[in-house]
Image 1 (cartoon, one colour):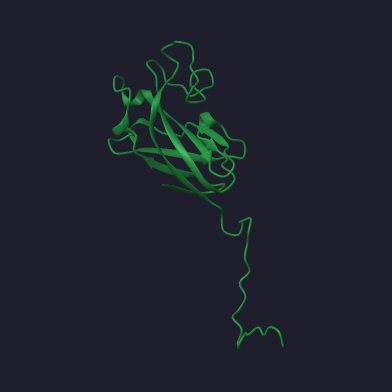
Image 2 (image 1 turned 60 degrees about the vertical axis):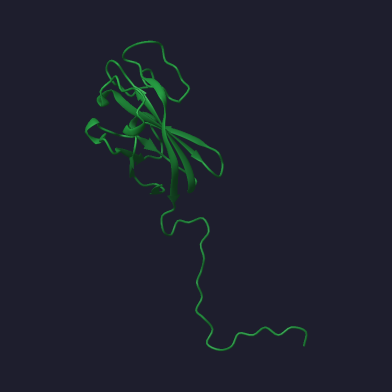
Length: 161
């Protein structure tokens, strides 16, 4: 499970290489499209997290998610609200030619198919999925409780007399 805080940057270490689909290209030709689904309202956000080829190891891939009030899915920027549980799905996208994360060269969803071109990414399939717990920052919670001191004497409630 990934744990993060609203309006904050976070990194996730996700196992992707053990389920890699396109092994005919080098790992420098692979990026990951992450689909984030909110459990409460069903909203969906897509993002290509910031990852470099030296951060794709045999055990995990380091993915950077950066907060921005106006998110950019191709720049690893997200604005995840409301706080709570989110599901994530990680899709492998591979290129034969030059890797470029832009609207015209990288698919924006797991079902989008771009025109055939070596410089266009192709979604290979789902490599992993899991849960993300997005907590609110202290003091910004929507529901806040006030703690009162314990009474010094007995606190009985009498009924019917």
